[in-house]
Length: 275
Image (cartoon, rainbow, N blue to C red; front, side):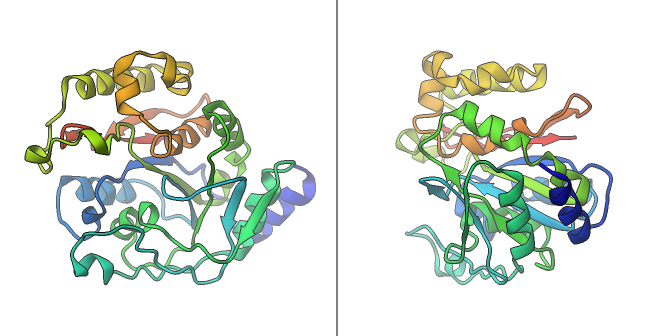
């Protein structure tokens, strides 16, 4: 980052106290229109932090070759799912975008090339949780994609370059699920909070301990942490947004958990606040 980058950010957004960073376990798209303890947790998290100038979301549902940021002024609401009630498809979250923030994000990540995207929008990993936090949709939201060709350590290191945004009132949100194995869902307990297979209970205990102890090495190297983590993270798409949140943690930041429940046997809603 050079002095021009710092000046550009200063011109865009006012100085603030350092914003927290969130990882939100977003779970089923139905959480967008249901009232339950998890959406209450999202709202509570929003009420406990300063109102952001803008939001940068890294969602499990935007995987790309290379890194992109949404740069349109009015992102569309993407209904990237099937088989749900029409009421869910009717939801429109009409938050503005921020081409300026997209540009600054791309510049902060140099020398990594970041493409400014004008076609994606807000997928359900973003809008299904942000709509509960900021229902008036007045806060600009952009998304940054996950380069699916890169390993976890790459994403952890990339996230650190974004820390300056926290001092300009930008709320950075990772949205996914730490435990996310759709093939092993216990359909009899799909809506039973606290229901988890033995391996899911073990994986939750391990990851929670690592998070609270600051043992991010084990989080990053999850593939080497035993069979329970292999079941919990059969593919990294929903896990990598957590890595971005942890990459933004500084030595002065505290870390806490909320919405820390298993559901449906093979999913966790565990969410993380940093700062």
